[in-house]
Image (cartoon, rainbow, N blue to C red; front, side, top):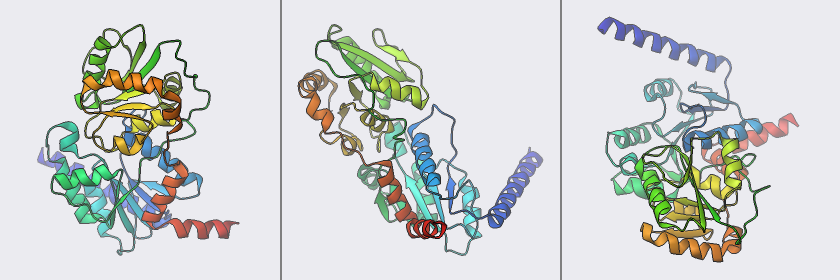
Length: 341
């Protein structure tokens, strides 16, 4: 076992050295450290895919899981990467690479137990970051709540791919049919709200409300339509066929599921927890107990048009501009664009 572990470490170290050599020979603007999962997957993967696609569309060179002394900036996501690899690569730079840590939910609050992940995030943040991109104001406050002060936090909300999640072609809202409610969750963590949605299917009048849940759930539904996780394009199309998004996610830093629904034109009824209020604003209503939801749904149906019109999210362009500013790449990209022109 010791020999096998030693050989594995030697192979890992050789791969790191190879990738650093390649990065020095062909330097790009930004090193991104995040281990992507294929879609359908959790919200962080979707947000970062949208970010990378827009950066590359603008001409920013992005390399994954690697950097060198010639890399202008490095963005590393929470704890979802090989932090030992990053530490080794960062130690080989001359200190001019701008190191930015993207941070989301406080894991012990979000999952409901402490497995040491929050301490790891703290150590990465304090050990490597020049600045932190927090995906909501709630993120900063929740980390502060458990005694962690993030390095130079800048709040930048999660991006959403507007080419996929948009309201164009959505089904018009009508009061002469059942109101179509939908909730989505990739994770089966009960704190994502599926048990509350199961309570709703028992309490709401089936003559007035139609319910759909998309994703993984720890509970079985009896009346609600339950659809497995969908790829982004299919999910966006389904969202546009519904009227209201309902979410009971707890301690979520800034729910991608909520942002995707709002982007598709759905006002929301949501648990007043984490960063959800920062996304919804006046485009829906918050609840603190599930018993409030039926009344809030009635009110939302009555005020539907004005609440839908209140949906207001930062655009992908605005979010990418903010990222570029924190990464120190805004002037570089503009200068290169002028040279290319």
